[in-house]
Image (tube, rainbow, N blue to C red; front, side, top):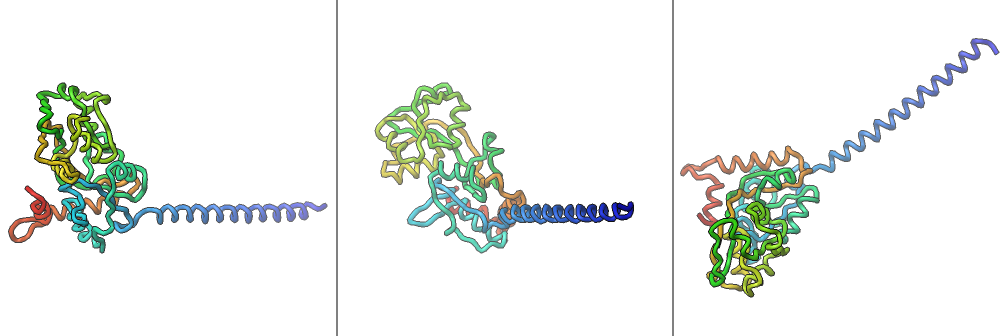
Length: 278
């Protein structure tokens, strides 16, 4: 065989290898681009792509006479309006707190409100707020004569709390033994135990707790604040996979609602707060 023939055949082989290489590379580019586009379209583009969930926790969010209302719900509608979204409170789902918390922790594109922002939760969610402050207390029946002069006295009592509630961490931070805590998924069994004396107190928000006691059919005037655990700011909490840009849009809209004032120097935020109490 001549040398020229050998080179010719070799060149043909090389050309085939190059062509095959281009084909493999093109396939890789197509697959990679498709995957990237798939990830992009999997991200929420706007507020309308998110699922909104809340619980019974007045004055921030609650249902009364079949209508969802409260500070965080009224503010959310104003945030949507500022963001240019045609949304209203009818898309919000009312669920038990534990279900709300776990869904927002584990399900993409989910927003929960109002949630206490604490150091233990800081890296678990993304945040927009604050919506406003609330006070966490121990509620007890007057006739139980619960007396707490210092955090050490807390371990003298059986205390009820709702699972995943920030009140639990507040109690633990004050040195309460876990064995003295009785956790439930909803408020109903806790109020029942308060009424029958199975527990001495309930760790919850003061206004929300009294409202829920009244809603259960018990006499709220029979209850007192036995101890103040602390004050916390409530926020809109987003699943960690929510794009930063979308959370920032929420924050900017809320900041505007707080800062923009009318002719009498009152913001929409202040108007919402005054609607639901001092």
